[in-house]
Length: 287
Image (cartoon, rainbow, N blue to C red; front, top):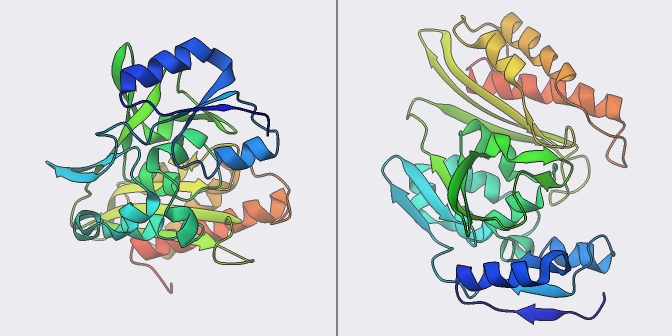
């Protein structure tokens, strides 16, 4: 890595001023688990690192009304072990607990992971089915963006140069909702998935009243499988309907060839694991 200057501002205003002063030569850093690796590989070049760690008010988990508010600097491990998350949304604690290794989870931050926009990281799929959103802040004020709308392309988000993620807001689903997160891991438990699927469903009287399905490692961005949802919402649940709906995900994903599998193989596995996820949340497992 080239020589660089490390800045440790204590306010958001100071951080924004540093980013404005140094422009394209500066990068924000939180946990650093992704940025440092990319800098070592010369994929990212920066002369100035602006750390967010000393800025108060950007971490912690609180329950406000019917949603969890998670500060952007909250570490993955803190979400995994948070008593508040475990009580009100254990599904989210489970998903964050399946990210890489404990060592990574002890450093990686919630906001940093989302801003990094790696399409193979675990949390976005779960956050999308939970209808989570992020609060984005800048010198111009705040705005909220649904996690499903945050990702624009491979490692790209809708964040503007003078913006950063301040908070993740996760609505708590109805007590009748079922959730699941399935990862296909042909290698090791801490590896990226070949494909992974998150699903949330509410079923009443044998009819699917609400359904959310999302995949990671299935394209240049996390994939919201809207066609699958539309095929099942408002309709009676059956093994045949689930199988037909899962098949629709083949047209929604756009995987790439790599050492975890060919694009065609990943597409087939996306269908298989979507079907399994649907069977779990719709109560048809084993059909």
